[in-house]
Length: 249
Image (cartoon, rainbow, N blue to C red):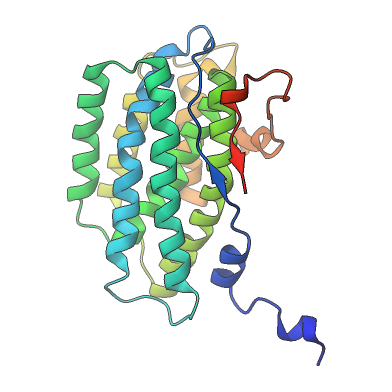
């Protein structure tokens, strides 16, 4: 048996851990948001309040039943650290764009509802990351400025691994969602999108486009409407101010 065979990953948890990449959030400057999408961006940034609770959900799951895999806990600890980093990065953007205090207050009410929901903590993290965060991140990309596009790209790389991890844990433990969690998902996304028209010639300014993407992600883990996000739209270095570019290890 070759050394490469011996060193091959033995589980999806090991694969996710091996694919981790280190980056450091940096303060960003305020740029121009897409006209008509300003309110959605501000509401979406206020929901950074959910980043630390998602980390807490994962942290609390480590005291309960987990799949019998030697890499699970190391991976989960790393994912918790990611959420703390996401909170910092989005906090820089929120400060740059001056998120209104009333949105911050309303976001805390939404966050409280997620914290108090009785579902398994990994399931709550899974639903949030799959069908809320994976809608907010392309919103930041297509309606945001250079700093938000960069933050979106870096967080998206982390979240892809988180979703794979949480999906596999729920599958291994036989954990499934229910209508109450879906209703909470719906109300959270609706709150973010409420300023947009139902339909628009510009799909990125269409409430229906983003809402149906969230529903598709919740139901199947796929969103045909967001297939374009597979191709990264990173700002070129000459487009961005130095303080809008992340630091990579």
